[in-house]
Length: 355
Ligand code: G3I
Image 1 (cartoon, helix red, strand yellow):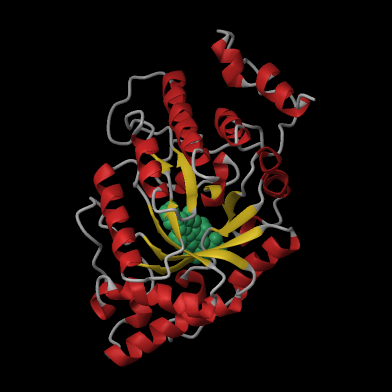
Image 2 (cartoon, rainbow, N blue to C red):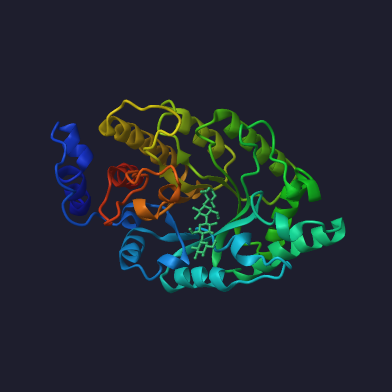
């Protein structure tokens, strides 16, 4: 029995299908589209923040299409850690309750990040620094034990250009590798059931950074670190060569660990150069890259497909649209401001449904 939902959506109304016939759509796709979470054989995630919970349009997209939720900022130190290193879980609890109340898997993001925590940990003697580092991780993970399916334990450990690891207050306080291993060890002790991720960006965009990241994964695993998953943020550069994304995900998958496409978006902006291409040409490259990512993710064995997560529900929810360089026209996500599917919905739905 054919799946009419899929057939109707993909054969009659898909912008790509229509464009392929040389008749690009002049109006948005027909009616509601198939819920992504019904099409996909794996969790489909989205990020969000407590300030969106009362936005009906946002809730409609999230609760229709997604099965997993990542708090965009409220489970990070910036929301939890006070200057005296006491902990305030008000916003994090609100996010965890949203997930629980709506039957969404909850992915914790992010325990240790180079860009947060420096002020509160400044000037501490090593013993206090270490004790409070452990305490932060232990108390946060313990609080959500049994509610979070996984955690980004260390976020963005690799240097921007891929040449080694970042140095920062955590690495200076506890060691380049040791602060990473310590974070995973403490998190694992606090919640042995949680899948613990090393998460980073530009792994597909910059092969050198992807290679350094995977060398770090290998080093941590060889040292017996309870690293349980690989997170590739996938903030895609639409101008990278064909095949680069596939190559990275294939190498990442070779470790046999769950893989999380953790923060997918694909900006149409061309910040660094004059872009003479038409909007249609840029959108075609964007669709090609996102299709490649979703297909590479679906090429992983089912047990390694942790989740396919997009970094925002609608284009206007994207952090990219809050950037001062935004021109008000970027469409980096699967749904536009009105909650209507964009061509990236087709790209992702088509690939995830193939599983
Ligand atoms: O909404 C509150 C507002 O009520 C409050 O008055 C204000 C006070 O500063 O904060 C506002 O929250 C801001 C939030 O974004 C919502 O806009 C936070 O300050 C701000 O820090 C937060 O930025 C987030 C950023 O990470 C830092 O946490 C972005 O939303 C989020 O998209 C971005 O996500 C990161 C991933 O965690 C890691 N990978 C890269 C990705 C993009 O930078």
